Image (cartoon, each protein chain N blue to C red):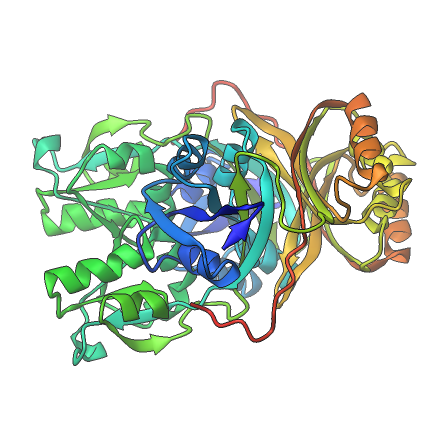
Length: 285
Length: 285
């Protein structure tokens, strides 16, 4: 697939069958995908040119923002050029023929285990083993021929590693949707951007946030997200992450950011990109 | 200890040696503490009178807000009557005489495992086992006499269950501070309240948050926290949690909340309480 005129190769954290890979394949089906071990390695692969793009989960409709990835977006200078969303549907996967009663251990990423806590509590006596990714858990069961172990991972991971689903959609909250951003070296976008992500820090003064938000309200710019999070190393001091319903081609966008900078400790533009439109019939793969 | 004129019995989630118990014992040293299995059970114990108070972690300086507990504060009608903070210092604990080289498995709560990810990655080949609480992991090692297993838990859990620390302060971020709130059946507080926690939901309109925050800015009320989080079951719709630097005895507090209600879908007062003052020399126990 072409994106800004070049073939796409998207780096994602995890093994084949990971949710990040599924999100990339669903939104950009012609792109090549390459798994790396950590989120830092996603940024490194893009910076070094080993991948044209990187995909990162940034927000979950149940768990909220993924702070570590927002930190990386702030620290590194790689712009957001697109966004996408993926429903998270966890399955309990085991080798074919294994019955649920035979399961003594469950492998998954700590977040996978935490998102299925209510379901797992109904499997008393089963040992929960934390791994570095959900799809890797499925692979470990296949490679080890483990007949007393199940993995919590996607249906896609089950297909890839020849496991069968003992149960599907086992996450505590059914409405579990993850938002991903696509990063690149250059801010080239595939369509006219109509959304912009920024981060800013304020001086500690009463009404500071009110003044900050006035720069958007006065220009009728919609805020589609506002999240405060503790600044690292300065407990209970907050950095704000905001999504604006306006692209960089709109003159109000630049003006609002310049205006915001007047009363902020710092402001950083994380990227301007087209808003994700979920195609109803898009398969989750 | 007396609090609002009665002896305190504080329910916490977890086993003896849990961080919640440590926070309660540090802030209210004369109180009795009682461990229960879930956060829901903390609310149930207070509602039924089996405990006078309950303690809940609500925010971590690294990980952000603990959404599930904010949901419970919203759903149940038990007011916040105090707050406290505790530094989180994770240790790698094992039976006396066990050397780090002999460790093949590490037990902890998924959050404990996630908070020590960088440290654990330097122990290749070690199996990570998720449990329902950090202190319970330490107890399992003692009770099972497990000489190939370590737990990630507090130094206090190590003392309680006769384990030794192979390493201390192994969390990825050293500045890891957790904020807890104390809930009760009645809004009686031990000193004049000067802080108030509220939650509110807005109609989806440009400038809605700006208007909402104006009710505080116009009255010179400081916001010490503002967090947006996705509304359950309505992806990407946001509920806001705010802490106001003003108590219920201040006439501006009630006026601002009434004013806020004019333009909000709903507003809920979660409680008015004295701001926590960290005594420098307080031991972490």
